[in-house]
Structure formats: C-alpha cells, structure tokens
Image 1: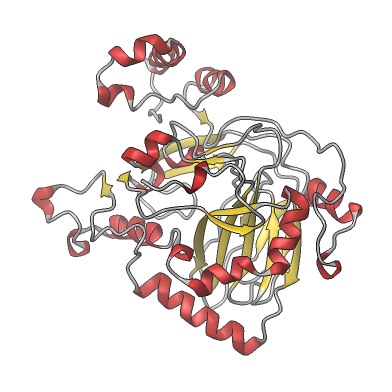
Image 2: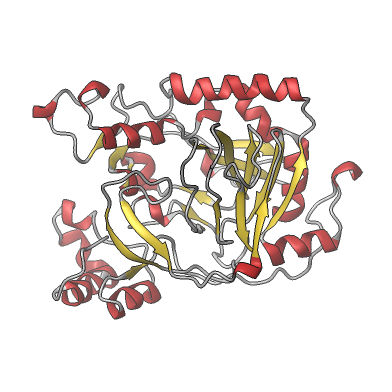
Length: 388
C-alpha cells in the first residue's frame, strides 16, 4: 500500500490501520477495497509510515533476527562439504559464505551459460507467460492493443515483462535445476538450515555493459511483491528460514558488477525512503525509486568477486547489492531461494486467485504452473507441494 505523501496521508493511514486490526469488519467491505488492505503489516511498519508521513516505508516485513542457539552443523554431510562451527558462526556474523567452486570445467560452464542465457532472453516462460495470459499489466489497456501481445507494450512495460519472464525457469529446465541440486550447494545449505531443503524461486540477474549495479537492499519474507502480504510464512520470522544461492554464469570481478555485502547488517529489516514513481528502469524495486534507510559503513562493505561456476550463499537480510559494470560485457548470474519445508510459500488466497507483483506493475499472476521442488531430504509438511 504505497501513497504519495500529502497532508491527508496520516489520516488515511489511521483509517487503514483500524480496518486491518478490526478483522470482523473486513468481510463487510467491498472486495476490491478489502484486497488492497496491507494485512501483512505489523504495528512498527504502520508507525514508521505514520511518523514519516509516508516518506519511509518497509519493502519487507519488519522483524529482528535472533542468533541461533549454537553454531553446530544442523545435519551430517559428506566430509568434503563439512563446515566448521567457525565457518557457520562467520556466516551468521558476516551474512554470507563463499565464493566456492561448483566443480564445473571452464568449457562446461560456458555451455551452461549459453544455454541459460538463451532460455532467459529468447524463450517465453512456460511458468509465467504474458502471451498466455498468466498475468496482466496494470497499465495495459485493451484500446492500446490486445492484452498478451508484446508488440503493443511500451518500453517500460516490456522491461517488466522481461523481468517476470526470468522467474522460476528451474521448473521447466533441468540444466538450471541441476545447478541448485549440486551437492556443493545443498550440503552447505543443509548445515545452515537443516537436512530438508526446498527451492521455491529462481531468478536470473544480469548487468548490461557500462551500467549501474543493484542498489543496497535486503529481503526476508518477500512483502515487496505486492506490498500487502508476505509470500513466505515461516514459523518464526526471527529465525533463519531461507538462504539465497547466487551462481555466477560469467566472471564477476569488481569491475563487472560483483556482489557486495555489508557485513553484520542482518540484525533487522530497515525501511526504504523517498519512495516515488519512477520513469526509469530499476532492477530491484521496479517502478519505485527508493533508498534503503541504513547508514552504510564503508569499512564493513565486502566485495565478493566470483568466477563463472562459483556460488555464494547468503542471508537475504544482509544488506547487499552489486557494483557497477564498467566493462563492455554483460554480467550474468542466477539465484535460487532455498527454504526449510516448515515455511509456507504463498498464502492459500494467492494460490487460488494469484498475486500482484506491485513493483513490476503486474497483477493477477497465476500460480497454477508453480510448485516447490525438493532439493534434499524430505518435505515432511507437504502443504507447499499442493498445486491448484
């Protein structure tokens, strides 16, 4: 729920806050109005929005992170991938692990990269297809062309469609899925999260030649997609329930948009400030300009240069971004979001009716082709595997 700041903002927010808290009133409200309520906001999120007059908002569910009871491995793994207690402690303190090799030769990685880039750029997604009508764009009007026809889209609309097209391609491509099944990844993740692992989301990231990298950001339960309710529902938001696996498909030195982390910044979720509609393309918050409201200490910034075929595992709550690409080549990477099976992915309503990707101006995104996949162990809870 994003407003442009004005003098009535606080009054509107008080009214919305009361409607969110008085759940018994919600069934009496018009359906369209009810569905726009930010039911996934907690009191602190409302307070920050109110106090700032809308100048600061949370793009993710506000919570703090508690330290684990111990830094021992959560499961037994092959000695080849064994992490020490110091390794796991370092992961929690710095927010990341790696980069480490996945065991592919240079030639193998080149073939994988060529295949995946072709998949991302030239092939229509079988999971979220705009042409098939798996979602709509807020700005697309029937009088401007047939919905589902890319030719009728503006440049910005095409940018957003291209972004959504690179979601969840592991569900249709075995080469991509097998990257995340690599034991160099799963055995390390299992020691941090536990023996049972699911992958719920994958996403290609690329930085074109001579372009800016990603701005500082962080995520946790993925409220940022519709700004109303989180996609992930863990048993306890203060525990680590998800990690991101970032795989370099091309070399990523500091000159070519390598990852960067602010060590020790995952203690809590921070708001973003100066939110406004954007006329320029953005890689993180889509159509909204924003700046994370967190003081970056240059001494704590770590540049994570990586070679093609290397992986970095990190906690998404750690403030992170990427450096600018000052080279003449595109930097390509792919990420997978890995969760414990006790974390529910999407609400029942989202599974049945679809959800909005507010930051990319998409609505009614259907989930009938989506599912979680088991990477390791077993899905003892099972509710994430039910398809519509």
